[in-house]
Length: 226
Image (cartoon, rainbow, N blue to C red; front, side):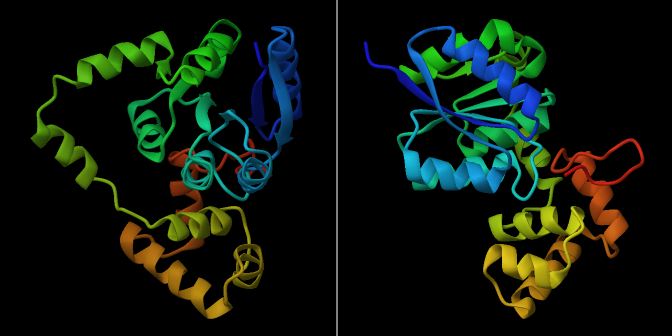
């Protein structure tokens, strides 16, 4: 039996090391690379073509949702297993929409991660039990209910979402332009569009929004975690 190749993407070293130890103990699972932020995860996936990507959601530079979208597009054979502390419906639905094949809570990683990897390797989906139960219940919701939920959240483009995250992390326009390979003028246009769509017109408001949505994590003092 050939090894299952896995890329680990999490900005916390201790978490990555723990996950790596858990996986390599299985014998047939090989951790071929580790990423500390979403952008690095996309780059490594495009270079190494892992079969499975274990993806945290709240990561610097590029969050897990956008990283998932980009990896699914660049490496269609890769299967994404989201591993997150966030278990609410909004985070789960966004991950599924981005292309995730599995969604696990970090609290149950020791029990569920290996099984999830094996299931998605077979082409199946896998969710933590509590999340799976809610998803089954949601299949009973009417199309009108689902549409009203979607309409409540402004639809940012992938590029606007990237700009929002970098703004919330404290990057200036020139720094964002360098990070994304854009002109400063283009970044300014994206910033204006983000503020217009979200109806938020100050940086502090954008930071709060990004934190509430799990796009960034704040330290106890309210500073974006890097």
